[in-house]
Image (cartoon, rainbow, N blue to C red; front, side, top):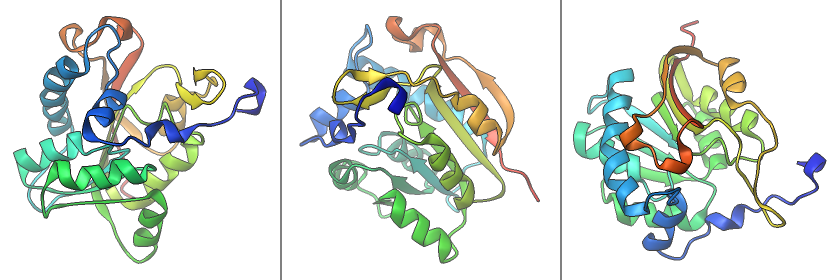
Length: 217
């Protein structure tokens, strides 16, 4: 970030209510938040379930959960347990109300570190529109890796280019290659782009999804 002379601004995610949260979680990008929420959420759940086995015994980490959009969808469909991780206190608090399930909990990244240090091992992880915004994505990818059991699945949806929130220039591309970073930790199993009808016009050609697996040994 020092090369572009801007200041990281994570407070952009400190929303006051669910409506504000929805607007920042899924910006319009040539569509609308409501249209994207309705169209993208079930498609993503389908793609995630095609990339991993999810049962009521599965523990999934939703890294960058926001208010729990995908956590809720996965719990409603499969009855799995989900640990939502987010840097925003407000997003985490809103997620409890939005998901409304005893199979969901939300905590800060630092709390996930503590849980892992005390023996937590998750079966799978997802990260949806998140790593593109992280200040130090390599640290976040490493945290996800540490929390997963050998052979666990990891599903990622992300911009090709970075969009780091800053005080001076709004969203900045610092040039970091998320695909390359994730590839150092996980083996890619499948990769693709969202269907055109699920992609807002301003994001066509600059987004991807990928399914990975952690090494078994």
